[in-house]
Length: 258
Length: 379
Image 1 (cartoon, chains in turn red, yellow):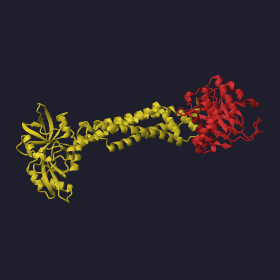
Image 2: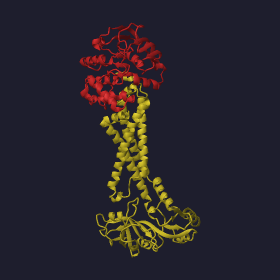
Image 3: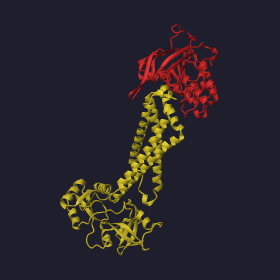
Image 4: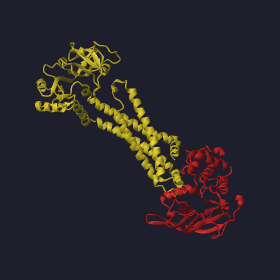
């Protein structure tokens, strides 16, 4: 194959780490975002003036204790939740300026999702599950399945393309879920605790796979995790606490992880 | 996404079968009960429908239905014949009698005494014998179902004798006739013979059957007869519905059937509704993931509606098939003969099933439509 099946629009994008203000434009720019939930008389502030950038070509880990606002933040970045205040720009687009249908189309085309519980459709085979994003974008079923098969094969699941989720191990299911998230070559990949439901070995395998196939020059990857064993796979770690960004630490890109 | 919706539906074979069973059961119960109800209601007036030679019925004003008609004087027959617009008018006797069989058993019968001269109202389709044989002394013709009831398992054989109020009745014919509501055998004889069977010296005329003159509307003739004789005159159609109305309003039949039909609807709706709702709730995460991935609410709604439509169509088809099979299997049973799957019932039940699946899918959809896609990130 002459093309990289993990990347849709691969180009000559700078992949090196740049100090803020000196490098490529961030894939995700969150500015002073607040999110509060009202329930009866009580008001819970989940995010409190969060400002953060996520750069393309990197795997950014979002870490912090339970309830610190990680899930709320990725939900807002993915356009699944609206912030109470602040601005969110994803891939150069202001999400708050999009209509509901534009946002749905934007998600379908530009964002890939990996969920903690995989959320594969149990009635569909692995290949059919992977093909869903392509079918949503109007790709003919035959072509969508062909591309899904290729991707699954590249992820070491060539012999499992016809298996249903209940015939796969947890690690295999998460690999299928990653393939589903990448099959339409999104420019932003959002992963919610991708290793939480897996044993240590499977978790390592999945993270290695993510680092190898998901991180591409034109793609930003955000991984929410509690699992400190996988911190070494991230190029940047954003630590949250109590609805705020506590720290942002950048790590030197290690090509061996790619 | 249609294909995915179908795969999601059929992927869980237990729930899929349960959904189809719910609709099929509801369809079977409702269609079968409505058809039987319509058939039984039709039977209450089947004897009215079987008299096709005449246009109208004349009877005592107090008559509520065909089996409860007081006797009217013989002189009324002449008065009716004298009404302008009446082509002809003949007497009809209708009563219930007990007949003694040679083996000593008694059987209740419906006795119809036809005009001696014209035999108006004689059965049209004969299985054995001829209509004209009624002119023989003591001659009677019995309906086929009645014969099988009186002499079960015996081949059709003419010449058999009965005893009605110490009078001999001799079987000269077997005919096809619509089943009456009471399922009693129908015995046709001449008016004069019916009189002797009932040991009546005076009139035993319950009805006068009349024909409207050419060009005169039947309703107009009825109005004239009522005005001139003070009797109740009704067209065949009106008397048919008057009889049915009596049974509808004065018996518990509609209520009982109504309850069964309603139960069929409720049970079917409950099984289907609950199963489909649970099916959707169990797939909530998957629907949430699809929404996160970019499936619109409209797309989700279409998926759920398609699933409901498939279940509805297959379940309805199976239910109608089972109903048809039931009536087919029972068509040779004498007492169930004439009951068939009513097309209006099938159509009405199709609407009911549509309502069930629409309500079910809307109920299930609400949960998904208001689902926050961000919930997929919550463990």
